[in-house]
Picture (cartoon, rainbow, N blue to C red):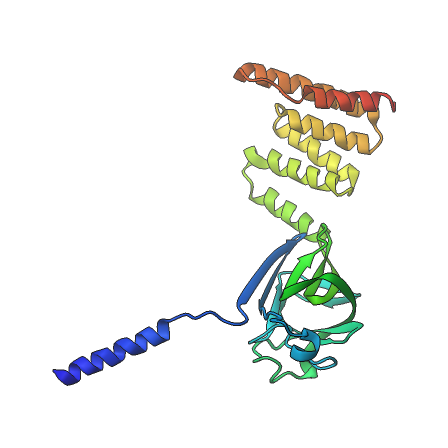
Length: 288
């Protein structure tokens, strides 16, 4: 009985030890960011300066760095990204860097299970770029990797620690993916709902100054599918104005007010967009 009790106590202790979680000096972090239609995920551990000069006491200048702490930092991209004319295909990569005072070498490596820099070989590199160091006045205590300067087709991968900031601009493909997504949505949508897909597509093309003729084609198809949406006529007015067809824009805008006010009256609500639309009409009338 005593042996059984001791055995159970030992097992209980082992379970307790294995299950416990303790704070880590360099806690793990995951960043998820969408740029255009590309999903980017970065997994890394974040060391802190702790009163040290990090790029002398922690990171050796001119030497390969894991770009974080613990296991190597990884980045996953759901579709290809282009960095300084070089394509990083969709997939998961480890990120290594060689920091120097004036610039860093940023390395994307196809082997992702490194323990730090052990096992790293240049043969597994898929892309290398040089990036200038931009000193910052306000020190950053904890090493940070971020995706900033985000636009529809571009962004920057940014490394910041203490008084150092390094930015790696990149671009992503959007147009071909968006076109494929539109076609897929049209194929999958119920006939009664296709007007929404057409309007979303028209809005996308218009907002990104792409193919005005295609935007107009899509919004016309949307209105054919559902003719009682004031916003569809307003979007058509904006598309026509962008094509400098101000007469057509005014006509579509007036129809937008008519449809909006009729719909509001039927539902017993107010239509709050008349003034906004009239401002557009006045502007376009002055340009006819």
